[in-house]
Amino acid sequence: MLEKIITYALKQKGMVIFLSLLIIAFGLYSYLKLPIDAFPDVTNIQVEVVSHADGLSAIEIERNVTYPIEMSMRGLPDIEQMRSVTKFGLSIVTIVFKDNVDIYFARQLVFERLAEAREKVPKGVEVAMGPIGTVMGEIYQYTLEGEMPGNPQDKISYLTNLRTIQEWIITPQLKSVAGVNEINSFGGYFKQYQVIVSQEKLLKYAITVDNVYLAIGNN
Image 1 (spheres, rainbow, N blue to C red):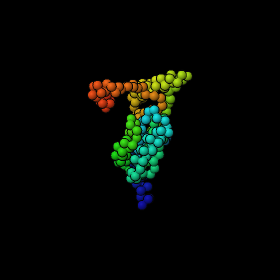
Image 2: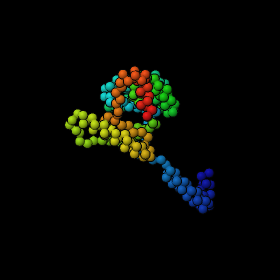
Image 3: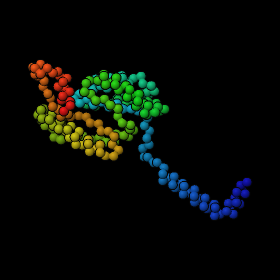
């Protein structure tokens, strides 16, 4: 049988050469289209819950934000592990699921528990799911620095100015870059306006603190 194949190939040299060139061309084409990554994606199925609590220390966030969120997420099906990172003004809880769980189903499970988690954290804390990413997703960290004033009051103004630059100048520019899904900022102080409510005027005009709160929020 082998001798017949060899004999036929010797008689049909043109066809053999054509088929060989065709196989080589297909191999080169497949090689050029082959996805090559220096860092293969070995990410497991995970969902991040990111919370921003400006003005709270890491210890306060750990006790009042991170721990309640972790307790709310306990009992979800197919969880392998849960870990968290707490920094000044920032809490990140990562829920890792088994590999056979669909990522969108996992996010739906976490989303259903977010309402319970928001009720357990202090008012004003922003709790939301992070975008779908990989372990290689956090690609860059940076800090805004300068000469720190000596006066305590000037320090607050200085740190407030740095946070304002981060939120209103740097963050919008970074979000315009293709492929950037999320920017997590922490540290400094948010610029704010404080309204001192007069009880006498509230009684005089027959309005409540909630009315004032809603009126300010709508402007």
